[in-house]
Image 1 (spheres, protein in one colour):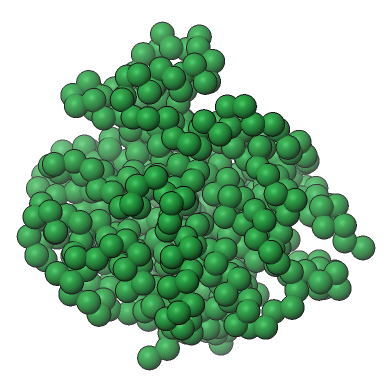
Image 2 (spheres, protein in one colour):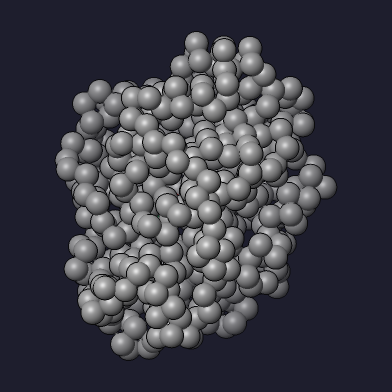
Length: 496
Ligand SMILES: *Cc1c(COP(=O)(O)O)cnc(C)c1O
């Protein structure tokens, strides 16, 4: 049966999968959610024998029900190819728990590649299916990794343009250089004076501006989103949870049906929400462990049932998780409210007006699949050093937050279930923070000298993504105030 997508803020708004992918966000500001979560229709044993692409097809066909088999397979085959530096695409590393699910083997060495390498294909296919005549303009706010992965995905894709906004002082030097060296006449990168939440709010405001939409339309353009609010990002992320389980099963690290935990370094709540969808589809998951850094809004939420963004925004060494408004949490709130758009809309309205909301006791009871905790900067650095000393494996800072939270979880609960640490970035992407954690003596070295040093001590070859930017030219230099984002879009598209 076909799956329809509903807005989390208005029951009467529905869309097919391709319409939802094309729109990104519902017109009422809500997020699209599937009207039910489909169950896996292949056994775990069958899945254990499949390649990444095959698992991807088995999952996505259940959600993108208005795509033909041929369309979907075309998207999958173009996305998960040699852009990834391993044929496993998302390998599970290690011989005992906790295992590491490495999601950083794509072209920008962070987990955003898992979904953003397929999104452009899904979007172009959706545009064709819906006979969209306008050129699609992807508007994206990034805390560092989405930006580069989206730029890489959409660069030179015919019928699209992409504008990326990032916090000028809120990303790592390597993240910034990756974005500013992006080639492609259809790409535009803008640094804003403000933090990630400012960038995200600015983008949402542009999306919701009806007058601007009309102006775009007159000029032959329409917006869409590459942020994780797009279901074209969310659903492809369900795949690697299933694939990770399948790998462990086929290697006989776990028994058939054994429940395992996933530990997810969390910012916008997209990655972990995909894990929740996988669990709802029938994947044997015990707990989804939500790991935060010092911006621990989610830890407080899981503990108290109150979401409160009224606090200081902290810049940490895991910048892709420096977020106070976790957009995708809205999809979970909607679900825990019994799929009630009106309850959800009321809470989200409160969030935007007062920066705070509290869920009911009954809703809180629905959150038992999750456990939340956080790691301080010091704990994060210590876990990088300790794991390196004990077995030589070097984690990036985001993965280290998860690892550190996992230790707290085990200590607190004594849960013996096997666990997978969802590893979201290569240590080469956050070289300075990683090397600092290992030895503060490295501090005097330049960014690229540190890269060479990391190769020496880890024995892991420098990824292509890093080699590329060593000598690449800076091609973007636009900076604006957070209040001028609309003007930046107008100027790039030459709207009149
Ligand atoms: C985006 C990102 C995260 C956070 O993922 P969400 O889906 O936003 O929760 C964690 N780690 C890295 C390296 C990221 O790029």
